[in-house]
Length: 390
Image (cartoon, rainbow, N blue to C red; front, side, top):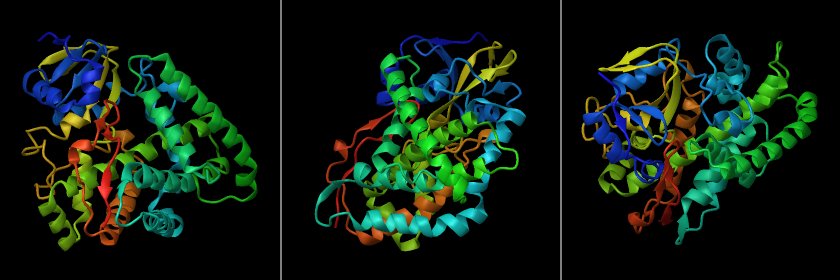
């Protein structure tokens, strides 16, 4: 059949609340061109997974993406095959299970303890700005070898990069902001090269610099920027989402505490609201997706936010429910571009941060869930999380 076109959905609609839109698309037009984005949305779990696992037909190398101007580089996120593999593996040793155990595990605990212990008991505090973001920033700064960067700098850079990467409307102000962030990051990278050469460690920057066959310095910078862009907003938004889900479902929170089922809460939270909502691919040939033919050279958006609530897999997927039957979600992607930080996120949030926070504040409350503001099309999560700490 011919490709249907949706001329009513806007980026503003998708940013405010995309889920009712995706639900209708799954039911009526699971493969559809959204006119305002000039991209083809694919919303079912079966099709999104198939697309991600077939890079020969659905290439990550998409010249239409705003990621290149946002990061001032052709990053590994937009590469396939051997080139993608080489750049991904350049810093993979820093994230290996062995290095996580030897170098990072104790650091995760120490940083979590430091930030949680600073929270004031008996007050209402915005955990998004005082805990979720800063903890993610500090852990990542150490893992990347950017200890000199402040929490505020790491968070500002991350936000400007992801705002630029999601700038499908090509707003020049967003690219100007990401340009400024790039200049600041480049200046820092240049300053710390001598330190990493003189005192090597297992951070990503140091590992890439001392590799037997190092990738070009420009690609090292791009790799670090990709990690900053995704490595703060994902755990930040995931943690805030999970806390919200548990505090608005007291029966589930009681169960999770009693059974120490924090990993169930983690997986359900990132299924319910995927921190990275969409991914782009470019068709390398004419291809049939479901009942629809898509031409070569089109940009296809896999909507993992929709796939994670697909009725074919998840019963009442619109609801946060730690009791639900376990089915694989797509929040970490699949195929060659599966998230490199997935196990780090599981360990830092599911094993450390969630149990520590709720142990320290067992009577924590969310006084008014309606005050929490949710936003985002490409990347999504709460923008605030005012909780009473007790």
